[in-house]
Length: 182
Image 1 (tube, rainbow, N blue to C red):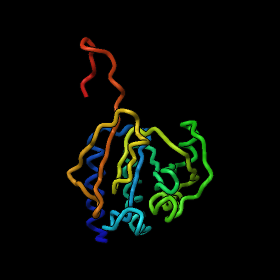
Image 2 (image 1 turned 135 degrees about the vertical axis):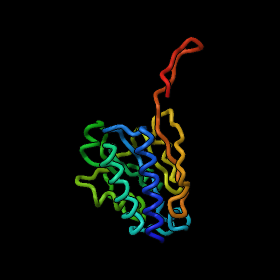
Image 3 (image 1 turned 45 degrees about the vertical axis):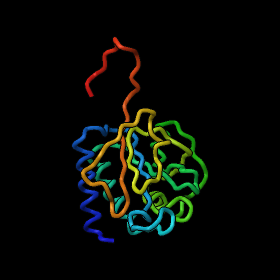
């Protein structure tokens, strides 16, 4: 892993998120990440705490600058459950499930996040305002219903494709309806 390249890619992505004005204070931001894919391996085959550390620390910078609430999607072995702070769970009136993510059941990123959070919990699902999918981990099930793709100048983090989205409210009405400019 080229740590400097990874840091550069993450810094570019962080700045593009911040300049977009799509992230709002207190909103939920979901991260799905295959550290295996970042390392150039097939998802679920080569999890790396070393890569998780780098990505987690850069995401904390995004959180501090934007005020978002981070949460981390586990892998399919935990049915893509979500790691978050207990205070976030309580604020959103979510229900805790009993499991501790580990690299081989939860994924390296979620397992690392669980160890770093002040008071970590796992919940079964969320409805996030925005998110980032590193390595095609399929976060879409955890986004609000109208997700809008957000494209970065950086299309990869390491060897993993990156996909991101923010959400907007549904538009209702018909031909005479008036909508605010996006």
